Amino acid sequence: MPRARKTFDMQSKHLTNAEKEEKQQQEEILILGKDQLEIPPDWLIDEIAIEEFMRVTKELSTVNIVGNLDLSNIGGYSNAFSTYVHAIECLQGKSSIVKEVNKSGVKLVENPYLKVRDNAASEMRKFGAL
Image (cartoon, rainbow, N blue to C red):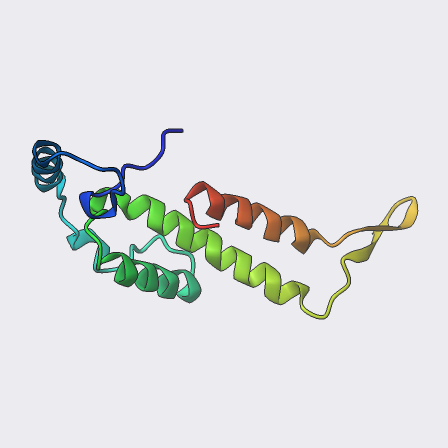
């Protein structure tokens, strides 16, 4: 996957005046609307996801690198974050090994919330959050 493009303000490379002007013009053309980021989408899974969506969009509103096209990424990250928080809450005070009862008896297995936590963390990494 290609690296995200840096905004002109974030560039550390020495640029000529002509390159600077060209980059600024390109950014002005690419500025997208942000109106869809003002209200959390109705497909967020719970209040934790909604609060995280609002926190992230508030932080990102100070930079001009996100817009309406980022809605699904921010929402997906927010849902994964909520799942991660719930898994952590379910793991607090619990053992990482639990008993599983099946037809052949009882065996010790990894706590299933560890997998939920790890899957949510992996999902958040996809959105560049971890």
